[in-house]
Length: 470
Image (cartoon, rainbow, N blue to C red; front, side, top):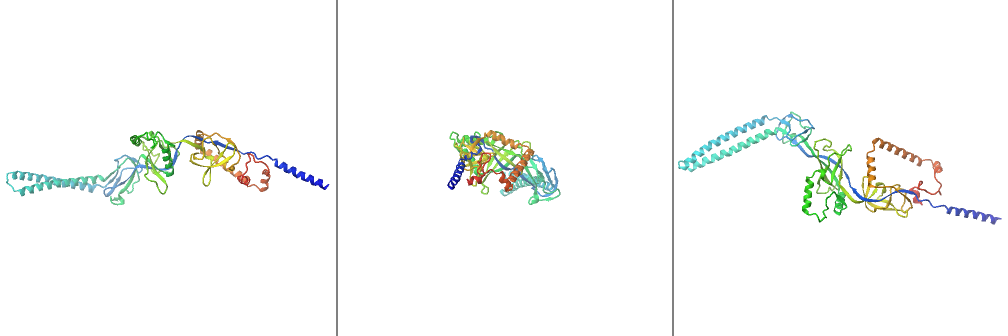
């Protein structure tokens, strides 16, 4: 009897063990993925920039005296030659009249010595006077002529100084705030001589810096033919002669910004695009060692002297016209940042995931992959951190194209602020609810948690910690 009981107990345990081994393996989780695409992509690069006037000058007094009057409204636009200030000119008028009197005296003396010389010259021809008398008369005449020149120069100098008492605009532009007030004594040699400043706003300059790494990438890509700038030919193109290149450079310098292949757009603080295109006119000759960047300058026309852009204003500029030829593209959600690399979760043909390091540059919501992926491969674009290398998954391919991604980004940028705020609030509420669920008491969590032996499905994925333990 005892042996029979033991046999029955053993059979029960064996039956239970067999049943446990027959539990099916967990189904491969369903993940969303996209196909890597390859096509030409406009490389529109954005930089912070500061607006500056094409000419910025200080207006200084060139003669001293009492500042009698100001003729402009501070901050207004004035034309070149407009009278700005009047300095007391009374003593300069006196100086001019005195110089004119000295000139008249010198001219009278010149005439007298000339008549004397003419008489001596005739008498010398008949030996009526000595050679000494002739020489003295000639020297007196030459000295009188020189004195006339000196006196004329004094008149010109006095007239110039009198003219300096009227301070006019040297350029057309906006006049700043007057530094000295009317009635102040000013001196051209001291700080009191600084009257105001002016800035020319047509054209305007946008000054910005390009990271040297990006500059080198653009340069090398252009040399290799990977990046195109309109119809510009690569320096390595031997079919283009040096004369043709020089002619093309000269044509670019003289061309309007609307005619060049690579141009610059300015995004104003309001978010609107400045209506005039800009043209790059300056690359610094050396790299800034402190910022590892190259200083650049773009010129924007301002034909109506409008104040949509003002000197000193900060804007964003887009460098437009560079095209990345045959770019390998993935959405920004398809790459994961690690401590060292960008990681792509590639779904192979057998359904296993390969975590692969890649090199890529982010532009807007897209990555331009330069190393690690090729067109046609399948990469996950959601839930990357929940999948481990070598895991089996079922890829659910989502449509992905450059046109669709660009349209989605434009729709996001044009979303009204109220809708964005509502969506942000909903996201916050969702995050709070998730946090509350995760922080539920242990009894409730245990009651809601699946059994330990239950399989993990696509809708119920294991946490990274649980996957690591497995």
